[in-house]
Length: 194
Image 1 (spheres, helix red, strand yellow):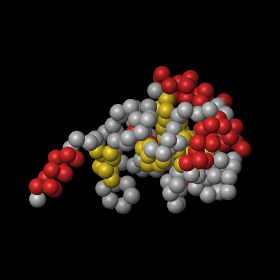
Image 2 (image 1 turned 30 degrees about the vertical axis):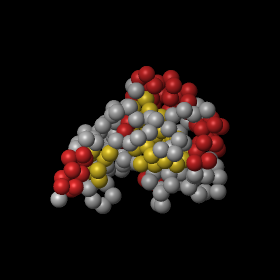
Image 3 (image 1 turned 45 degrees about the vertical axis):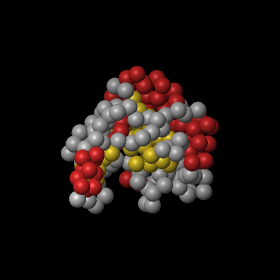
Image 4 (image 1 turned 90 degrees about the vertical axis):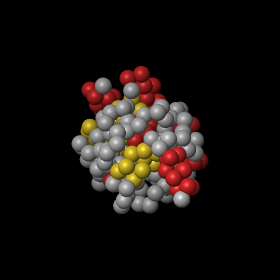
């Protein structure tokens, strides 16, 4: 009995958010990674989906450093959520400007998150794929691999078209789908949202 009480006492030391995601109560725990700045989403926030106006799901995916990153850890930032694949030409074109966009607006609270859904063969990317993407495009922002089956970001992609780029407001609600998903349209959307 004392062990259970001790566990409950210690559990109070970690920020938690209870949601209904994934078929039961979901406990949001602060991640341990190089990108977390201490932001904690409000209690009672419920994941809804990837449509405009909905609270995005709390994606928890591995990053290029081997750490798990939580999408909700960026609460309070304007988020560019770029769902791409390694084999996709337009995804590669967008990736060429990722670092410039991320750096240009970092001081204004922009978080640029790339999620790679597939490698060159259409399989989930591994750590080597993520690091190749980071190196190829000079990205210092989070690059995550969607290694889940089905992909956790499947709902973000419409009609199988990549890249799927969502602009997510500071309260984790989808503000808009950036379409076409190119650098100029994305920059205009970010400028308007900031």
